[in-house]
Length: 157
Image (tube, rainbow, N blue to C red; front, top):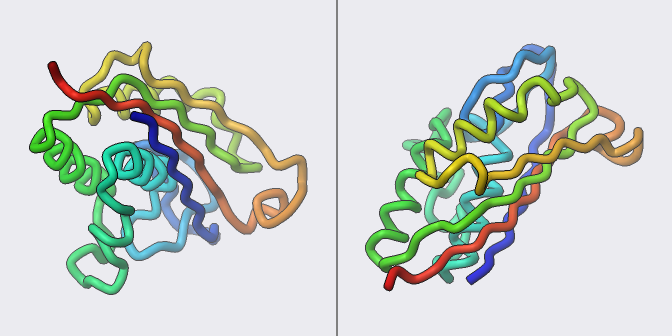
């Protein structure tokens, strides 16, 4: 089973930037109800999509104060429990991050390792790509950040 996820957030000066569960050194960070980790949010939606369990907003609504400032790793943990109940496991994840600055070439390995540990799959089964938007749109103007994720999950034998 394959799932696809997407997330985006507004960027603002002086806010923290979390990607894949790690804090990235940056002058800009996300404005969000939780920690605004677009990578983990896209991953969550991909996993939920692959398993037919809805979307991140249904499980962790921004209208619920208990998720205010929440670490997105909590969302991943909860979704992994739902997959386990359904006897499903993750085969791989492939994530694309769209961001003009900062450049992520020195952070991609850390992000891969963090995701590998969180979803309990080998690092070889986690891929991270970082792209700019070549100055176009809200990402190009450095007003926001986005991430796409595709994953494959399978039923345990």
